Length: 120
Image (tube, rainbow, N blue to C red; front, top):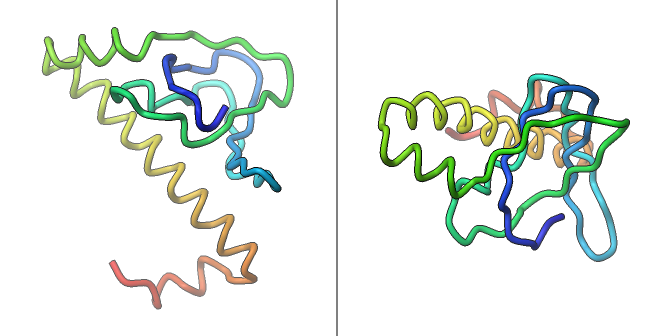
């Protein structure tokens, strides 16, 4: 849940879930996730609060990896770290993109029509 310390990195084996932004008065669904996808990337960072909430949409199975242990492995074995952190950055970038698209949708904007207007 958002606001708590992240400890586990999850790889979805079976089932599906939805990434949500949760505030005191509302919850916004940002991105559906299914088998082969991951969540819990903030567990790889020391002292990082969970930024988003993940809610199962059906019974699911995940492989859970302790974020601190995984981060230590990445530091001690740079090749493994690259193999883990590169796809993890893709997960982070996907969350940012999904958040941007959802908020544009809420504002009545199409991301496709705004692509040429956006800076960077």
